[in-house]
Each structure stands twice: as structure tokens, then as C-alpha cells.
Length: 200
Length: 200
Image 1 (cartoon, each protein chain N blue to C red):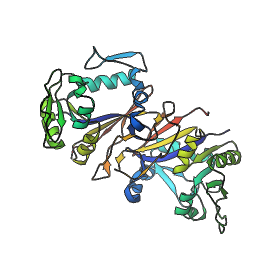
Image 2 (image 1 turned 90 degrees about the vertical axis):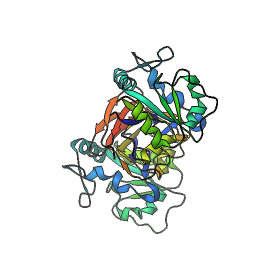
Image 3 (image 1 turned 180 degrees about the vertical axis):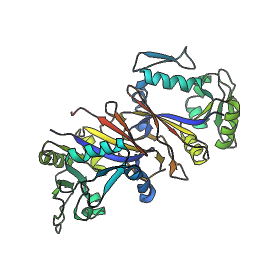
Image 4 (image 1 turned 135 degrees about the vertical axis):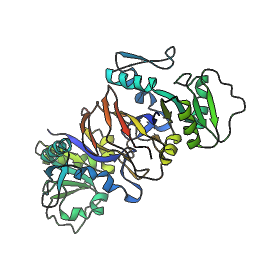
């Protein structure tokens, strides 16, 4: 069975977006800071150009992720990523209180889950075909961590201080939650830190 | 001239202390997680026992720090570290609105600075004899960073999620503040990340 992981580009002060949604360009500058091309799951829209280290990291991420779990807030903010999630045609489970009435799947098979993050992760694991399940970003990560369902946090640590904004992790309960020392992959404009946890 | 640096043991969610001051033991567990002994500046009180990587990191820190700048809140919380700051007899500049009337220096030469962090850092640099100046922890770090006076952040990243508490950096202005990619030193129970910045 694959792992359940969260991944985020994070500032040195722990934010995945700066004040008022600023800083996003800065946090993702590493995705275009090198010469090695890595096609995204939607190569017609995006090809990463990174250092060799980041390219290997991204390739592993793209090839080995079988499904995703996201929150409804992000789904709405992005208008369902215009129909196609960055992971392409892999199933995406959207945690929500009530499924939208008028959503028609186009590029990505979105599945609306109304009975919580734990249920969403269970269904995403079943749908992943033995590959990994990506969770988040946003409050779904804290909920999954609180529920003991997160095996791995992939921190893409960006050498900038944003001074405020949206925390990577907010509202985690049952703390402290401990991980093993990380696998470290040096990039350009980023350091990838893979923190693993035994499944409870 | 030496560098002006801040250093902190920080959780994955960016806190230097958990809710209600919890988590301190967890954040500093790496200081006793190995076999290599490194005497602190007060060896009669504390000898670190760490991995070889952390030992080299600590030795550099202890040997090459010539003075410190701290905030008055921390000075009061620790009652002036009982008279002797962890760095021993090196001068410590305390940023305060008003110097205490009744403080008598014993182990550490404390100097009370009432005209701000910039003045404190200037005096600490002059007193460091060409060695480095340590700033913080606490709000002095954010003030030094905002003033463009911090050359380096040494992040001792601990693989735990604390869920809340005291942020490492709070109230930084003039953001984003960018650093170079870090020097990474793997430890046991910690990853040391040294982020350098050109002096403005």
C-alpha cells in the first residue's frame, strides 16, 4: 500500500502564502529555477524547470501519486482547477459538508465526500492502486495529522521570510506529533525535507 | 568582522515553544541525543551530548560567538539566567525601555540598552572582538531582521509538530526577506539549516 503524504512549499516562518495571498510567486520560484525539465501531470499546461535534485523529487512525486484529498475551500477558490486538477486524471476526493449540485466532471474525476477526512483518505487509498495519496494543502492536512493518518510530510522549504499569512499547519490536535529525521534533497531556491512517520 | 546571527530550535510548524510553554523538552532533546560531548560555555552546568554533526555545529557556535543581544522579556523570564547567560562571561546586551535599578553583574557582563535593537547590535558587534553576534530568541530577532541587520538564521529544525505556541519569527516587516540556499547539517533529532544573507 502506498503512503499518505502532505506536501507544501513553505517559507522559513512556516507560511504557505504570505499576507493577503502575497508571496506565492516567491514560494514557487524554485519550480522554474533550473535547467532540468520535468513534465507535470498536465505537460501541455506546465513543465517544471528545476535543479537536478528537485527534478528527481518532482518526478517521484508525480509518478508515484495515485490519488489526492483536498478541502472544499481550495476546490471553490480554484473553481475545481478549471476542471482539471494539477495531477491530471487521477481521482481527487473533495472533503465537503455538501456536494455541489451542478458540478460535472471533465478532466479530473472529482469525488465529493461528506463524511469527513478519514473517510476521504480511506477511499483515496483504495482508489490509488497501491500508489501514494496526496493530502491538502490547507486544513485537511491538520485534520489528517490529528487523525493519525499522515505517513509523511514533504516540506519544500523556501529561503524567504514572509512575515505572516496562511500557516502550513493550523489547528493540529493531539500534539506533539513526532517524525523521524528527514531525507534531505538540496535544490535551487528550495530544500526538500521528507519527514516520515510510522502509521499509527 | 563577525556575523550577526539568530539561532533557534524550531518545530516543523515554526514554533520555538508549544502551547502554554510546552514542548521545550521535545525541541531540545537533540542536545542529549548522541555520544559526542561538547562542553557548553558553562561546562560545570551543561555538556551537550549529540551526534557528530550537531557537535561540530555547536562547537562552531560556542567558539565563534563573541557577544549576544537579547530582549528584556527573556531576561526577566529567566531572572537574568541566574546571573550567568548560557554563553558564560561574554557580554550580553539587553534591549529594554528602562534598565533595572537593582541589577548587579555577577557571571555575565549584562549591558542594558535603552535606544533600540539597532544600537544594541552596533555595540555588540564592537564588543565581539571580530567574532559573531547572537541575537534573540524572541522579538529581537524579528526587529533585527526588519532592520536589515541579520546576516544569518540558524534553524535547528526538530521533527515534531507542536500545534501552536510561540512563533520563531513574529512581526517581521519589509517582507519578503530572502536568504541563500542553506548549508545543511544532519543531526539526530534535528536538522541544522544555516541560511545566509548578504549584509544590506
